Image (cartoon, helix red, strand yellow):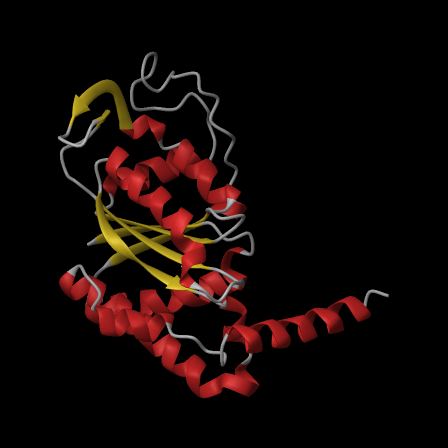
Length: 241
């Protein structure tokens, strides 16, 4: 199994998104030590915006006219079986780093259209269908805040002719840093995330029980979430006055 992780956090390998990804990878490697897993930290890459010139369809089919770090990422994409997008929720969607990379993956499509029974889409280069899995973090405590993001990636999976393999969502993400107060719950969540990675490799799916464990609330509820985080902001803002 060859896995490409497009990690879209602005904090790259130092943020909470990476904490979740690391636990997931740990589980994947536990299930299959031979799995080839490549992580690309998009915020640290030189990736220009798509110009919409369609050169990748007309002048140089399958190849973008822009020479930057997307050259390597497109090559890795083409050679991978599973694509994992990891991104925090920024303004109800993926980070700008992740969005830019997905727009620049246009060369893997062809200009020609096809009907798939659900409607019209572009054909995709290559014969082997890939799987798409989403890992996302959000500061808010309710899972509904992920809805726009998940709908976006379901659409992407269809348009790129990929199998949508599911998602792992970590709400109230900053609670993972409150180790003194919630050590046991945080430990259980991280173990649950690791188990998600293990099951994903073993069965290409994650059981509802394991997913619920990984996505469980750490704080005591929305009111506790608001009070604890507001006190945090009071302290941070006081230091700036």
